[in-house]
Length: 230
Image (cartoon, rainbow, N blue to C red; front, side, top):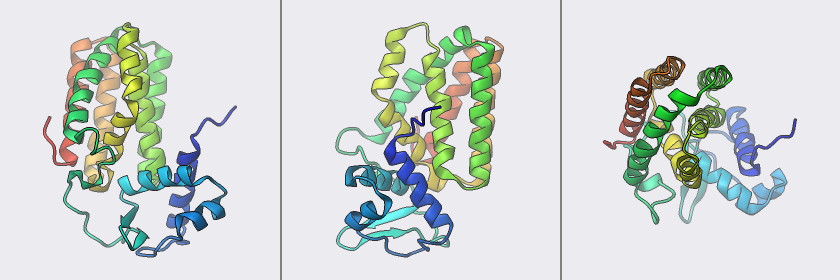
């Protein structure tokens, strides 16, 4: 099987592992991007993308003029705001969540008509993997499995143009799935997993209304973790 994991995601996993093993300890300053890229054997653009992912997930913090530091495990999370939103110069995070509501709720309706038993099994497996990753605090895999879940539902549309529209904005939508992680409590993640399973149940029941409602509740609750209302 060919490994299709983007280089930046593989780098993010590696750095997360180094942090979790204590090789990069809490509050420790990371090496410069030039040195770190050389140590990991990757290009600086791939490293920068990985660092942005890790910062969104709350594992590191970058301070202009000072460098990038591992997050302090004992620190209280900041109040959710848009300062960490990497696409701020293009679109507001609120706007992207609203697009998610429009696109994904409709796509969930279509998936209720189109999903096969294999699709249901795929979504169950992704949700199980997402839950297991959270339990071991593997934030990278947790979000990757979340992305797989939503992307697979989007692929099960009878409207090819609608699925294509999702793919065209997928990078922005994915960031709204990473953004809430630092502010996600254990009980909220349990609720999020339960919301995934409610969507799956609706798809399995071929209930388009229930699938749309379950997806709407899930996106709305995710947005609330970042202090937004949609």
